[in-house]
Length: 268
Image (cartoon, rainbow, N blue to C red; front, side, top):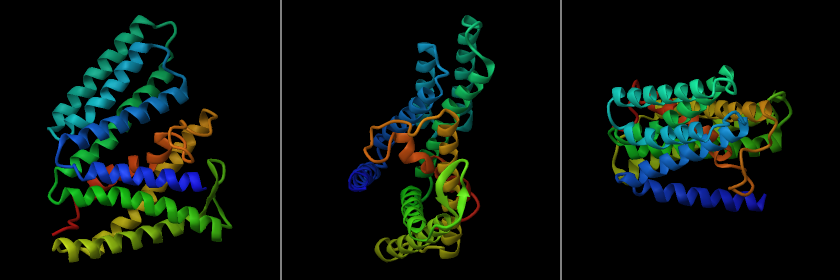
């Protein structure tokens, strides 16, 4: 547990350090690195990529997507179109060894992960974007941490035991409450320290959604791991596993906040 806490603090320091340079290319590079790491770990877990060229193409789109998310939607679509063409050219070349269902999984991983993470860049381009970026990670950390503590202290009823045996209904509820508390504190800090008006009703509504979506992301990652019979996606973060293990909830939270922000204004 101590190793997990120390590693977690290290991750927080790195993330905050990157966010301090959110108005520079540092953020794009960091999101690209995050996308590449998660795509690589997920593809290695599936063991579906037997071609080095396909792996290179998949990591390539993972690296490029965060750099084009700030441009038009047509630019993103063009990038994905090029990847699809390259992928099928490789399938044609190695038709006897590739399986269509494997290609579908590879495509899903290689496109969805960088596109979802790319919403971090999209949010950064919005008015008051830096505050939305902090909401992504505060929501993830509050939901994960409080859900874990609540589950250990009060957990009695299993949430989805076939997917994640340790997760409980009580832990899930605790995660929602913890995220609401974390967002409420964040809203107060933003109002008092940065002189912005905060729509607390929208903020707390977002907190509920963020916690639920974040837990869905966690369960989605658990489903992949169970399907391919692995415990973790890697071991680069002691006590947490791989990069994907640590950022699985962020993967789902980022696009959810980006979508929410299109309909509700939080920072005025």
